[in-house]
Amino acid sequence: MKIKDLSRVARKVIPLKYCGAVIVAAGTASRMGGIDKVMAQLKGEAMIVHTTRAFQESDVIREIVIVTRPDLQQEITDLCRGFDKVKAVVAGGSTRPESVENGLSALSDNVKLAAIQDGARPLVSWQVIDRTVRAANTYGAAAPAVPVKDTVKVVRGGVVAATPDRSRLQAVQTPQVFDYDLLRGALKKAKKENAEITDDCSAAERMGMTVKIVEGDERNIKVTTPMDLKIAEILMEEML
Image (cartoon, rainbow, N blue to C red; front, side, top):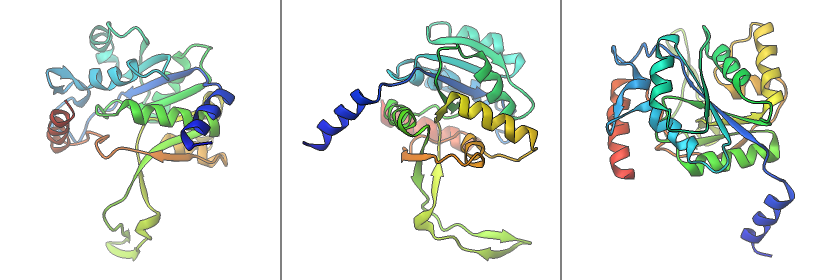
């Protein structure tokens, strides 16, 4: 049997669970030089619209909740009114984990898998979404990643303390997809223990959960600075 045929059989054996997406866009954009990045214009539309559209058009995503600042709730609600998978636009918390928790709470009781996406990754492709959700459907937790190109140094006190093996390093992207109950439990545990987590995978890892890594996309950049915004515009031109 060919690999493609085996893949089709596996999909039939493991039915795809109902997956909801939480798009987190509640940050203050402190490094954007006064630009509100989720509302920044790309090809005539706000960045959050591009990000949301990718999940709206994905066959594996059944519903969407957007988490943002209270002052943007109505504006983003109006911008995304044409996306029927968007069930709610809710206010974020004081930290990213709290914002994720708020988004998870707004998903319906049907949700078994939760895909957590940075609102500032407007170039995420349906392929990345699809393979990450399908991997999480099998393994319980999955994230896309790309190999690190630069040599990375561990620095302490302004001097190099170590040089990790670059061949073993990957830069993790979003969406990061998890069993819904697992993620809620992991976030609550991290909050209770006052643990510092840098992404949702970190919370799952603390619970001893293995996160399956799938192929990411170098174009799936996170817009953090004005330069990133310019790069996103160029990449979007090439993708059209």
